[in-house]
Image (tube, rainbow, N blue to C red):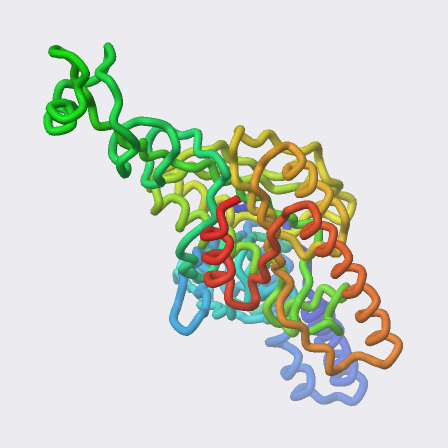
Length: 421
């Protein structure tokens, strides 16, 4: 809630009223017209009442509360507490459209409902509100209140991913993936001589009767252990490019269509959900200076933290640079989400691959609409896309798998998961 202002000022209407009353009085006296003087009396009395009232004591305090609505809308209820007769609302929606409204004051509990269309996921500023109290039919204007902002984190739409690629070697002790070490829960491994630490219920009596070399020898049936994988999601938020290429650099996200960060947030949420459902541990890193990081964890609570962090991830500042490579647990599968126009994300992926991790580069660039481009702009777009293909070729050569999120990522990830390296 903003701090109310108790100071105000006279409105231009009061100056016009005083001048009008004086002009009517002068004209009536000069031409001996008492009816003209009488016409100016109500205006003069109103001006005197306003001057006697003063400009203090006019307060207007706004408050906002947002909630999701139907058909992709965000509803923001704007409430005003004021002792003024009327309150002027200045509402800025989606940081672009400005609306003005006059609502009753003086304890009437007036409220206005603003409807904002949700076009993108991530941090959103659907409504900004400032108010100004009006007293004595607009003769006294309070100072504008501080701007109250309604900030929301819009969650990306859920998308089922299915099977995820696994690291070449599983290091976890609990999970649903069959590892290569002896343990419990997996498929048959071998028959081995009984050793200290083996459980008696693991003794294979048939194998003992058939294969034991001397009396007293016992043979146990060993299985593979079930392990969990370590999944790291790395998001590149250095740029946010829309499907409409003509909108790049303009900041017009109302006409940009689906953006790369929309795809990145959707991919991060889908990948995190698939990994948590499989019993794996997931970590999240935003690859810019000051970007948020969540340590590796599992379970529904950790998934809720991941979803909240993903929804709160927006585009980095223009002066933000890549930070040092985040720490990745040994034997992880790293999923790098980027448009790969800039080389920093690709270089980070190559460093992780050189460290022995399994790396999957996920291209989050949407399907492009270049219908409004001029011929020089189209040539420039083809040039940067060709440079990006060279980046993908370098990634392929280093053993990094590349998946395009705008296509069918589930099938591509399933094929990569089956081709276990």
